[in-house]
Image 1 (cartoon, helix red, strand yellow):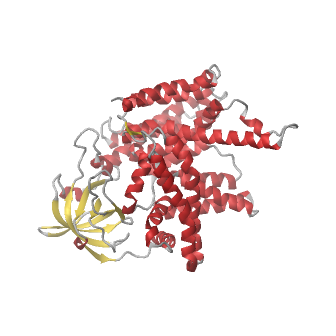
Image 2: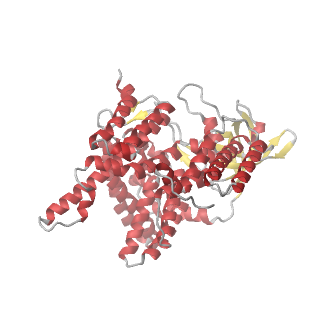
Length: 564
């Protein structure tokens, strides 16, 4: 495509320099519209083909070709989402199910490692632990005998079976049914949640005896790595430190444990649950530490970037996959490749490419709260951390790098420390402001102390992550000293638990908040972006006035939480 004679200005220029952003936005628009259009795959394929052919014919007319390509991406996103949402195989196990439970015998292959979960914290008495996993159905027993079938199924075993693992072929007896939709306003829509994972059927197994292992799974290098990492982490922990081991496993590897029920609820109530779940921050901390270690050893930037990229890929493989982890791994690998190739790095371009890759793989993740919070918060941090920092700074943030000829060294250190703390606070505040509407929309909760809690817990989380990493490595190298490594890794975890206990005692730490409308969320983000990012508006306003529209929207959003 020929370059234009004159580059567009403003937002158009930014999009022209970052084509992945426009492609990703067009694809997202198509996915969002997939339920509002007719489900006619061949019609949309024909229209997309015609638009693509038109873009090729008009390739010399840049603007027209770009518009046609954007429309093509919208239709492709809509088509892909419709196929994922509506198209299922004719032999899917769902054809043997109904909304009411039915007793069946099925043979299936366990797709992912089973996880042990527990009941909700708010219940008056805790439910027994249960085991959940996804499986691929192979056969179902009918009156005429065993019938070959297919499809995915969500399985729950209560209480957990001690010997189940990924890759096994099992025969199970249980109650099969279709997931239930939300029965009242605010209820969780399990049918929609499972449908986004292409699962139309659930299987409830009331006892471990209802599962018979027919064939052990073959050797899987991925499962071997995951088992080795978890065994190394567990070595050396005594029974009285089982809670610390469970918390460290959740923090480092994303493992769920029934023993963490109370701790998870404490993190949720204090607005710091993002620290407990594996996210891009965890990947960035560990990857940054490995990069720093390589540089301290005198390795070249290219070699250090390659080693860090390999470590991040290994870490992402060992942990349980989730949108934040996949996004962080893709971003870090892209940055590492850019550093190794000595190319410039554009974080917005890389973020758009990561989102596009994940949506191509699973388009319905767009409606997932984890996906929205992950990419939305990172996008907000990239765009708004600098402008928010300027609001709190009364001088040029770059003057800290210039050493004055007069004045004490202590004054320079004090100024650098103040600027660094302002940057940390601005980042935490930006993340809280950006994520607040999405958290309110999906979870109906508000925690006014979340910014302070996140800042206070961040150093302890970093130390716990590094302690868990060294615990795994040193236990593999020197297993005889596993108890020593466990004691060292325990103290930041214990300090983190005590800090969460103190944060939970703060007043009004968990306020119910009605879900805002989509229109209000759009207005909220416009009020945040315009005064902070649009130069023509930002330059006319004093620093303090740039946050006034955000504060007004914040008051309107949070006002229902304080009504009696």
